[in-house]
Length: 300
Image 1 (cartoon, rainbow, N blue to C red):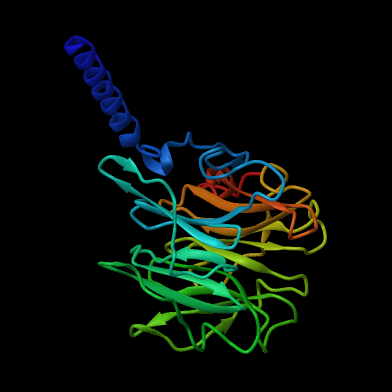
Image 2: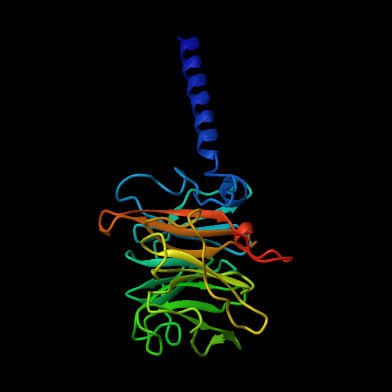
């Protein structure tokens, strides 16, 4: 009887150790959640890990903090975050202080603020020692009486916003709100980038050297296509260039984000035409072949 009891205790202890080891396994390890970097053809980011397949599954608008140690994204209107610790990436957790039905979550460069759109206005919640604070609505010039959709931040906290506010060409237009003296004092329309075809979802490079955005202008592959423009030394922008079939699809490609090292473009792809049943995934693609060669023109 004593031997049997010892065996049961030993077996239970063995199971306990195994469980501890199993639960101690990190969600993922390595840069970019341990994913193999893509080439010039867009690939789903972290399939089965972040992006789930199937009708109605929706993951979009993924962004990293500047140090690459935090990643947040939209999952069916809620914001989830995973962080890279000494043991690896944590299991994604919903940020409970952020309400549902939000759009385009975006981490600030320092990872201490989270911006998002809700009811077409922009909000921010800050990280505190006790977690994420309640969101606060951002006033003008970041929000307006019109609708604010996609946006992104440069390393200097300047905003690039898609908005239907007055002063544009109609529909979605891209605006720039520079961060000066620790505030945003104005939003500047960028006429060289805007058309009557809903130019939105701007993803600005950290150093503002280039931008990728989505548009439904004629000549695309269907839905919304992604376009790249370069910022020139005088502050003007080159004619936007369609990124072509290795990036774009017949579906809606949107929600652009440039990685902190400027190597990768992250974006989202929505399939279907019914928001209640649509699916969306986060994609990424290496930018090397789409940016200009220092010694010649851009590659095709």
